[in-house]
Image (tube, rainbow, N blue to C red; front, side):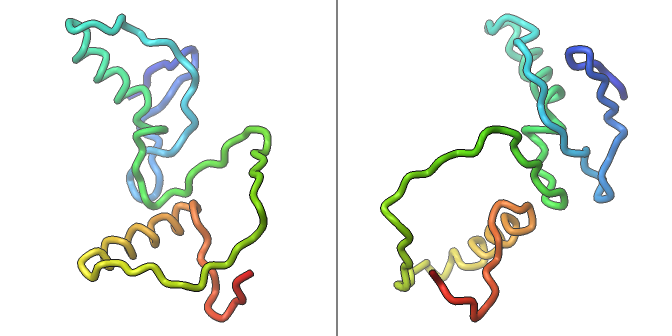
Amino acid sequence: MTYSRNAVTIDETERATCGCPLRCSPPPTALPYTATKENHVKLQQCLLDFYGASIFNTCEHQTLPMIDCPSLKLIYAGPVAHHMLVPVPIHWWEEGKKGLDRDAQLGVIELVPIGEPVT
């Protein structure tokens, strides 16, 4: 299915190797319908279709696109190394590990090699 987003043609048949839609950046847009109770269902479906390949794309096999914007300046007092472990309940270990592995695969965080000194 092919449709147009503000003069940009999107081909929904374009798929990643895993079968998910290819990630793309969302184009800026105004709402196609006025936000009323009567238009709720149409507006919801339109937003899901419009942003399906960008914001709502939850594919864990594709890396997240980098944001093209000026660098963000963070001001802090200085580097601090924390060597004290934070206890995590046993029943959250598996879910927490899966979340960290997913974030590393998407490129949100970077794994630190074992034995690398903490600075």
